Image 1 (cartoon, one colour):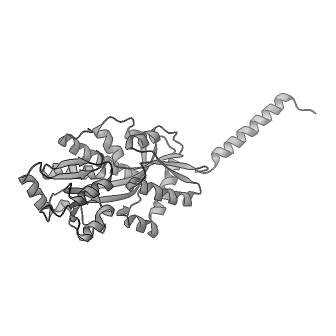
Image 2 (spheres, rainbow, N blue to C red; image 1 turned 30 degrees about the vertical axis):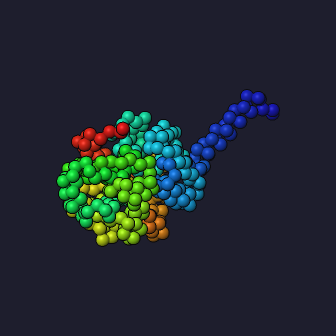
Image 3 (spheres, rainbow, N blue to C red; image 1 turned 90 degrees about the vertical axis):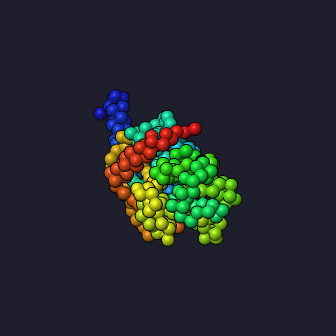
Amino acid sequence: MRSSPLAGLLIAAGMALCGASALHAQPYPNKPVRIVTAAPGGGVDFTARLLALGLTASLGQQFVVDNRGGTHVSATTVANAVPDGYTVLVHNNTIWVAPLMEKANYSMTQLVPVVLASRALNILVVHPSLPVQSVKELIALAKAKPGDINYASGPVGSANYLAAELFKYMAGVNLVRISYKGGGPAVNDLLAGQVKVMFATTGSVTQHVKSGRLRALAATSAEPTALAPGLPTIAAAVPGYESLAFYGLFVPLKTPPAIIARLNEASRKYLELPDTKERFFNSGVEAVGSTPQAFDAEVKADTARMQKMIQAAGLRVE
């Protein structure tokens, strides 16, 4: 008995549907994943590249770092991406702080926290020509000479900018901001004495402190830490002060829970490896790893704290 053309079409359609179902059923990921992140260099890019290595090894597909420049570009790209787990974001606090100070094309409600990968502190350093040996002495000098002391800062919303502005607000001092596009030029001018104060990453100034070209006063963590051995905290002089940079992985809203769970599990296993912890630590960063729920709570708590400070200090993007 010969089959009809219609029967042949139905069989072909059925086979196509079965093939599509089988493809859909393949475990995530079954193709390369794009990690959208900030410009090359710096803590965000460093974290993205380490996570890409770990996730590639763990999940068997290539995780490719896509440097997309500023906060708004990278966050907007992922917020508007298809929520299938193949476009993810690695970034820091600036993605939830920036919208508090300027209009953004994305909302944090469009992004789902997956894992808090790492956190870093800054070190309050001064040029040796500044006659201060402690945070209390810096505050006293700044109050005696309001507006006379300047500080180096990255872009508005960057970790060192927020650390400095939070210090100004909580200590009640007036330091004049000198803006730089990146940490490298800022440190160079600090070394030259063109600026006197900076809230710098540990990796960028540790050697200069050891050589005596810069003087370290305190760490921005709430408690003393091995990331800044021997340094007191700013909180010891300014109770309640804490300023950390958080680096984490996000996916678009409506990404399936199973994909979020898979990314979280693979990330946490990688972040728990001794070699991974050492690589982060040697760069002045603490590897963390967290549940999505814990990271979400961290984001919300930091947002509320920074919003209060931003509103009180009247901070806005120029």
